[in-house]
Amino acid sequence: MAKIENYNFAGKRAIVRVDFNVPLDENGNITDDTRIRGALPTLRKILDDGGSLILMSHMGKPKGKVNMKLSLMQIRDAVASALGREVKFAPDCMKAGEAARSLKPGEVLLLENLRFYPEEEGKPTDVDKTDPTYPEAAKEMKERQKEFAKTLASYADVYVNDAFGTAHRRHASTAVIADYFDSRDKMLGFLMEKEVKAVDNILNDIRRPFTAIMGGSKVSTKIGIIENLMDKVDNLILCGGMTYTFAKALGGNIGKSICEEDKLDLALDIMRKAKEKGVNLVLGTDCVAADSFSNDAATQICPAGDIPDGWMGLDAGPDSVLEFRNVILPAKTILWNGPAGVFEFPNFEKGSRGIAEAIAEATSEGAFSLVGGGDSVACVNKFGLADSVSYVSTGGGALLEAIEGKTLPGVAAVNGEN
Ligand code: AMP
Image (tube, rainbow, N blue to C red):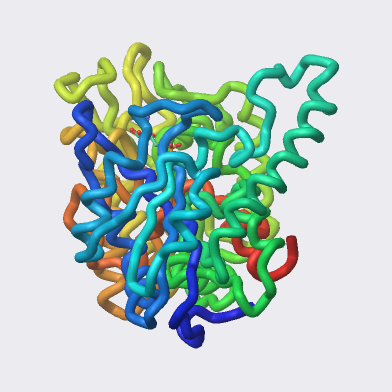
């Protein structure tokens, strides 16, 4: 695989898959430009070398149809000002050949939202999965996806994938397109390289003790990661809403706390596996219980397995936070995904804040810490600690799949493993 740092883009047209799926307000103004800023090192390298740029991205879920509310035209000015140069716009990503071919070194062309075409995602949009004609429609769509990717590839001499957020999808622009480039002319961008390296640090270059903190609302959505981590970590802290599924599985009283009734056996199984593998499984012992799901609810501290009827655990309690802290501080490798409570309510953010602060302290003592998955990123941002951890991942689903040990199609494709 080619390496972006060694590649000379002079005189070349580079098509770059970026993740410009930035949040917009109702007037189409960007509310958070992190993703645009994240792509800049790659884009600057190409332009500084004397290459020209064709930028392609999706925005939102237009489901294969033109939807001007999701037009990338809305972000053109922001991209232009971030790059400090004019950005041309191709209003139809399938009809951009001429505009691409006429680019001069240093020029930039932004293609319209790729997902205005169903071929980008490569799944039939007008036939239901249960319909008997679906397999045939799916096959036909895969063929159309190849043609779509080939057209995009025809715009450029070199392909760069810098969209970690969609690297777990085998879409036309994230994976299929790579088939149309020689291995010397396809590569990961700087942001993707950083993300892949961060995951590698967590999975393959572990300094011990390794502590993973898994939170969020449900155990079911985290089970793949928990199982993969079980072979690697020394300590596994499980917190947030899933605490109560475990507490109930252990015979506790959890009031009306969030609970996945059909996952009680799974919870017991996780506890059994942790014991077998010698993993120190840490479950919060106490919680902040509330009499309603609201920031202004009445609260009381009680054991996580002894919550009065009509009350619900919405945050980790003080003893739990202390215990989490004691496990996090000596760690040398740390992974955090998912909050310890309903951190969106200021009165129930203490557990997540305690975790974030302990991770920041351990990081200042030399630990490598990776924070990823939407809500934990929102946490470190909310607590002003994003700069105090080693790495904040931009990828939600992609990060989780990578940590589960799955090969990401977007990475495999440029490696020629398509
Ligand atoms: P996830 O998307 O599974 O990572 O879950 C994140 C969400 O879990 C956040 O919006 C939190 O508010 C929520 N959450 C965390 N702890 C609890 C809890 N004890 N009860 C209900 N929701 C929770």
